[in-house]
Amino acid sequence: MVNTTCNCLDCIKKSTVFTNLSKEELKLFNEHRYDARYYAGEIIFKQGTAMTHLMSFTSGLAKVYIEGFNNRNIILKLIKPGEFVGGPGLYTDFKHHFTVRAVEDSKACFIEMGVFKKVMNENPDFAVDAHKNSNLDTLNNFQKFISLTQKQMPGRVADALLYLLNDIYQENPFKMTLTRQELADMTALSKESAIRILKQFKDDKIIRVNGDSIDVLNVAALNEISRIG
Amino acid sequence: MVNTTCNCLDCIKKSTVFTNLSKEELKLFNEHRYDARYYAGEIIFKQGTAMTHLMSFTSGLAKVYIEGFNNRNIILKLIKPGEFVGGPGLYTDFKHHFTVRAVEDSKACFIEMGVFKKVMNENPDFAVDAHKNSNLDTLNNFQKFISLTQKQMPGRVADALLYLLNDIYQENPFKMTLTRQELADMTALSKESAIRILKQFKDDKIIRVNGDSIDVLNVAALNEISRIG
DNA sequence: CGCGAGCTTGACGTTGTTCAACTAGAGTGG
DNA sequence: CCACTCTAGTTGAACAACGTCAAGCTCGCG
Image 1: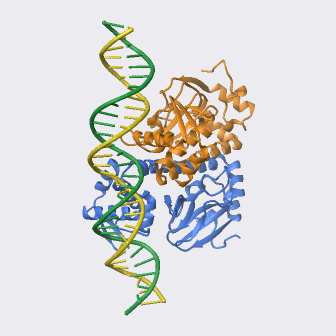
Image 2: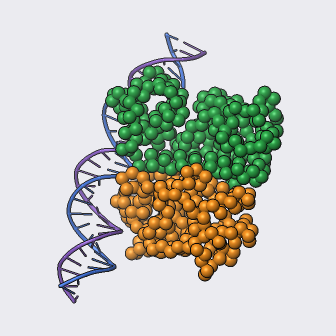
């Protein structure tokens, strides 16, 4: 089903992985895609299911997380409009290895795997861009390994707050649309521990919390806490 | 410098990522590669340095690890002959983001980045194989996230032992060529904790340790410990 | 025979989780 | 308008998991 209200050729939300596509290729994508809208909390990709489409996120905020043990999740990253989502299932078992879930009301565009692979085969520049995109995720995961396995609670929460401030909300103060449990899933902590560190940051005047708004009063202190772990 | 004793075309150690290369492409690789020998403990790729070559591991055993805080490392995987090593620096910043170090005396073959990228551009099947190879690493990393952040000490050590048994040494008993510190780096534990869990496994008759030989007496128990975390 | 590196063990302290109780705010129905 | 309920958030106390420190051990090697 072709969406009549928008078109890949003049899409302003498209990811940078699409920059090296010709008009013909964008047209091909446009003919083999569909849009969907999601309410906050709804699942976009479910871990374990078949990877039939690739996703270009166009509006809202979503979380990408691995479903682990005992209902505990590891949030690998958050995705914003303009982000392209494939995953390690691509060219391996063609399954999703993480779940993507809308955190805020969101929209996404889905491209059929078949035409994606076709264009990957025919356009080496696009193949390189896709490869680069997945390697950037891996670089992010490496930092996460260090944060989650070698830093203590304050360092991990500082990493998460800096990520939210610098990469996601990009304003200060920002409206925190993640729950405390989700903050815990980002830091591999229990919800209670994450809350306790937030409180400690509040007491130390590093942040101020007003309802669901978080004001980072001392970015330098957060950076230092992140650095020393 | 072309090695005269061997040739990519009839190399029997080559990784599966090279299966879709033509004779001409293998010949090209052969003209832009070199071999090197390493003694146990020597560094093959150093984290932070420029990625000028890609590596095909031909003999021995090596560890791939991220250098984190306070001289603590995270071993992502071990590599055996036939393994191809690129890394997330490919198409991003062209630097190495992990260190590769020989655990046993080893040999490796290095292909120039330039010809590698050229063949990636000209041969889509090879590009797919390279992409697949890197996604397999990512799948491995996802399992490691779960193991390191959600399992307790026995579960993590069980994961490491099963990996050594099933994927690396592939014989039982096996000669453990990793130090206790390296086992700790695989499990994100302190050396002492790793040793304590090994002792516990010994007391429970799950393994038997004779010098540097480890005999897994009860694989089922290890699998169960891995499963429950 | 002595040295040094890796290994082992115990005692102890810290870090982080669990459990339970409580609070605040939003929605719901009488 | 007022209970009632439900969920997310918060806090404290007890506990378990894990790391640190220090000492001693083993074994290969000079």
